Length: 76
Image 1 (cartoon, rainbow, N blue to C red):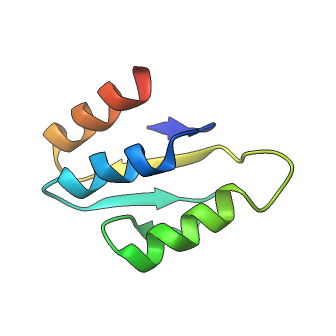
Image 2 (cartoon, rainbow, N blue to C red):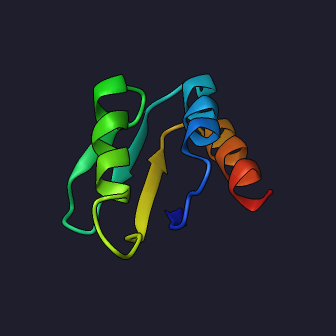
């Protein structure tokens, strides 16, 4: 699922932390960051706020339930 403009990063990572399977952030450059890793969470936050414009990125999960929870958060 493609995402951009995440404004409440803390709440977003709270949802990610509750996920049961792998959650990856795919950057426009093709880098894949494991969002279950705290280090990768910090790297992704730095990437989100490093430029003038928030880049569109893709989140990939391997559990359907995790994707549903992330979609529910992103829509609300």
